[in-house]
Amino acid sequence: MNYKALILAVLIVVCGSCAKEPESSKDEISVVEITDLEKVKNDIYAMAEASEEVNLLDEGKLVKHMRIDESGEIVEDGSGAYFDQMISVAQGDLLRFSIAAGTSYPTTRRLYYFDQDGNIIGAPLVSSGDLIRITEGISYVSAQIFYNDESNCDQGVSLAKVTPMVWEPKELGGGFVTSLGDDGYENAFQDISYKRFLGEYWDCYVGEKEGYKVSKVALGLDAGQQTNYFYVFEPEEYAYTVLISAGMNACELSPIFGLASFMKGVMDDEQLLPLKNGIRFVVLPVICPSSFDASPKQYLNPNGVRINKNFDYAGSWYMTSTDGRGTKGDYPDSEPETQALKKWLHLYAGANLYIDCHSDLNNDINYLFDTVFSDNQIMANAINAQNNMAALYGQKGYFSGDPAIRNWLEPGDVYPKTKYAKETLGISAMMIEQWEKSSAYGGNATVQCEENSIRNYATMIEQYVLYHIVGSGY
Ligand SMILES: [Zn+2]
Image (cartoon, rainbow, N blue to C red; front, side, top):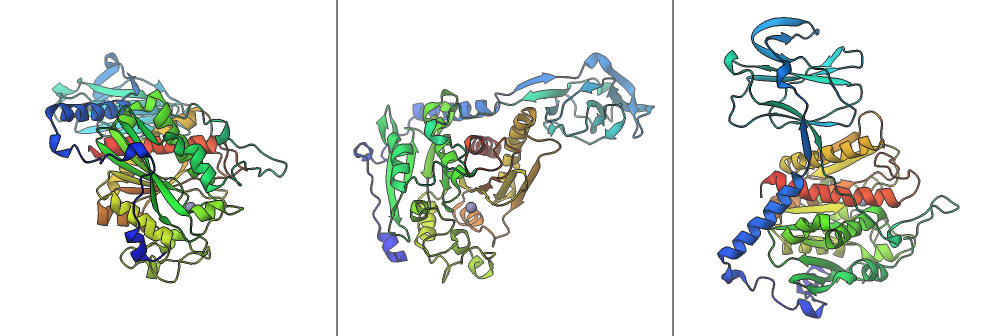
């Protein structure tokens, strides 16, 4: 399909109950509606703050006019103070250092890390609000503060153990789980067709119930002449719009079923009700339907093109390389799937977030998180989410030592879709990778798409959405 035809493609709203214009109530915005929006925003913020925090510092143990020097010796210091406490911690613990509001802010704030024998192994400077994850080898912590004015040195210092609320899917449903076959690669999803996948996992939500509307919309034909659909999950009043896609590389199954599991949680799980009520989710479940229908499912589109590399932003196509995996097409944006993705993003210009879901099938590196970002703000938000999940997985014993994390900013010619979304449409964007041979999230290291990989995927999406919304202060 050529570009002109794509533009002319008519959006078809399949479900009869979805005929109502979504923007029809725009001129009737009243005080009540604004209050409702404030409420759904507050509920989302409350989800992110649902963590429990217990202060570990005992103010009675504060020793004034003294401090611990770099070698661990206690020395006199007119403006210093330290807590005479060896607070026992475990790998994976999350601590938040903070200074109470309204008290004077210490000029210097430092934590002390001790090994199991009580030797100092680190003394990082910290700021109020910092979230610190305890890594391997740290057995005890303590804190130290300096003031310009020593009279203030007994005020509101807190080092709290944080237990974040990390949502995980309670059930994936029988169909979401694969089991190992004789060859070790049995995969119940390998032969599921696009039509059946949409029917079983997505079409079931279409319709309208108590003001919440789910629409199925035709986006266009792909290179194999399949019609591609996306779904709009729309509360009556929403504060945010979040776009999520998967299946650009249709053989990457845990992102595809992870996304389905996340939206199952949004629709069915009480815990995610604030997200359902406050966010309009626009979901493109499989970017390349014909590649999903192939057996086995294909990494490239039917023309042998890698859509990530066909996608052009500001001449990126001329610079990018496919690293031998398929071609980048005959010219920039030559493929119908690329054009459809661009068109879809344009339909929702100004959305708050776009996540594209991928996984990597052929590497032994145990990255816990490997993520590409459009800009620094979304990366900072995602790191908060990753801290929560690393704490959860650390406590579950899924990895030893530090989790391997690779976060990077899109340079412009590697996965240009992220930068394109941000710089041309104002949509903060990220691309998630998941390492299928990783055991760091509790996944089975040999199968492509099993329970813990799917669970990890759904959890990642939930955490990235939540902490991006809250961290951006939208
Ligand atoms: Zn991929």
